[in-house]
Image (cartoon, rainbow, N blue to C red; front, side, top):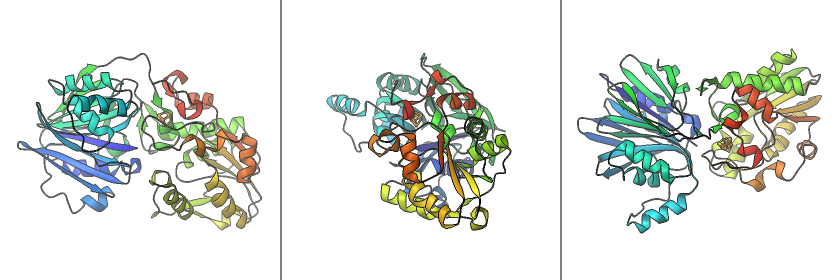
Length: 434
Ligand code: SF4
């Protein structure tokens, strides 16, 4: 997973907005971050291992400019910089190129050499083959299979493009004299940007001096918005393709309450991503929502740690049960998804039982996960997914709870407000349409 933020201003230095806009995408990747700015006639680029605020707060010197792009990542440093016939440019992207090996071989046969084995290097080298950036992006889009949203900075202009299926989110915002384009609108809120609209699937945009213009739309009959963004990945303050993440999660919780009612004392959540679902469940069932666990502020997001061992360790550390809420009470616990079920079994259920819970009913905000993501979200391999080996009843027994039920695909369709045909469902169907 990654996040990017791009900003252009007609008059102001953008460095503060670039820094904070990128910082507000930290939940999309915590291993690497990078910023690039344009000023005078030169591009500056700086990348770090670590978090945006930790690594850049004292390292913004000389990064001023009226246009810039920033990136947070789980796997590789971005932006990267290339010199090309169009001049120097920096580029960052979010997504995954399914035919990466094939394209790398093809480029090697044409005489290209590679510094890394990352998607972004292939994307950049394909874009660099165009006579201009719009033609280069179009050329790249014709070659790759997969998902991407990308931004390019060159000579004070920004080019932004979203793949023709619309997998990864991308939204445009505006405030006096400035335009920003980002993975998620949560990065606009505190910076004072208003959402103008989402970048359309297949759209290529040029941004200059605080204005934007559509240069091209690459058409596809197949739209595939990433459903998991609304279920888990995105920040609740974001609105993606016109649907508030918070509202979608509450709707899913409401569906779960109607589909699987149960008499309990309180509705709780696995924080943070289960909270919206739990509030929706509580509102629909008229049973009070309460904090059963709190997430310790200084723990990181377990799902995006690079190794399983680190994920497991973080998962155990991050949640603290609130004993006074649990003893002698029956609870519904809402979670965004169940991967292996081991965290639920070895951590959450143990903590609840130790604190005297009367009964535990788990409600999951999506159907059983069956397959890994090929489009840029860090999910698990098939063999790590509990639902590939066990029935729902066997998973319930394995994790040791009194009840377990999952939202259906129809619940997701209804809650997100988009037709199933336009939602990527590969996580649950194991069918890859791109
Ligand atoms: S496979 Fe899952 S995580 Fe990946 S794009 Fe599709 S819905 Fe999103």
